[in-house]
Image 1 (tube, rainbow, N blue to C red):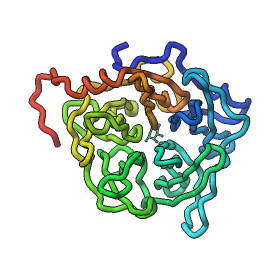
Image 2 (image 1 turned 60 degrees about the horizontal axis):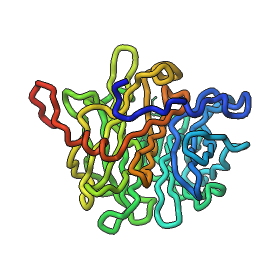
Image 3 (image 1 turned 90 degrees about the vertical axis):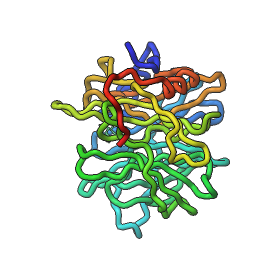
Image 4 (image 1 turned 135 degrees about the vertical axis):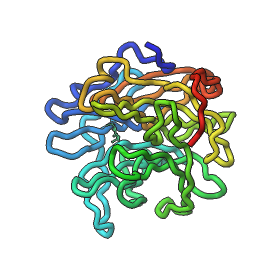
Length: 318
Ligand code: BMA
């Protein structure tokens, strides 16, 4: 294995067989947070009745997880939006004060995905905040601090269909509902595996160098696409400025459970947790079918962003 992030030896940590029998087909892409002395995963479940629902799994040690007996009681989309939500997926959790904000993909089977926001204080009761984007936008990740007095997020609008090049933007808001002042942020790079399509992974983590963003890069090929994880370091005050970026993927599909499943060759994260001992835990969906955990010291991830690139071609940022 050559990925910088080291997989937990008992991966996958959760599969659909850990749910009550017959409930779902696949589980993937969990939001992850430490809450009240426990690790919580907010897991996408492809329900057998159709649609994607969210279900919490809990753990005392961050490795052994158990699903709650019932799925999350997710708030209904208010009628005034005239937007029917058939599925909610890829939740990204950000703590601000005593509240946890969760951006997620609100999916309508006929129209596509928009970004919606829910909040909670206790992971028991969830409250709708707003539907926060136009169509064909997703991968929203909220910064845990305001930037220049405004809420700040990554988002990833589509430029065309699923396979067209597209990349990470930032937007700002005073009230968490209306988002504007859009800025381009992390972009695809030529001669790297993230040269085509990229999007936020985990909400940014504050580190001494600025912000650490773990994002996904997508590489299209004849039989689909390969999803990998990369890291970037952003300026603390002006986070749209990329200071450094990992030259090689931190994690790419190498194991059977990452290479084979509902969608082959996928590792996809929605949250990473920085532990007090300096380890970063990355919970991720593998092949859109199950959940893995991979870890590395923050120091090594940061170092990898500053490593000189050894590829011989001359590189020009787009
Ligand atoms: C992305 C999202 C993820 C999914 C990934 C790979 O575009 O839809 O939920 O894991 O594709 O299929």
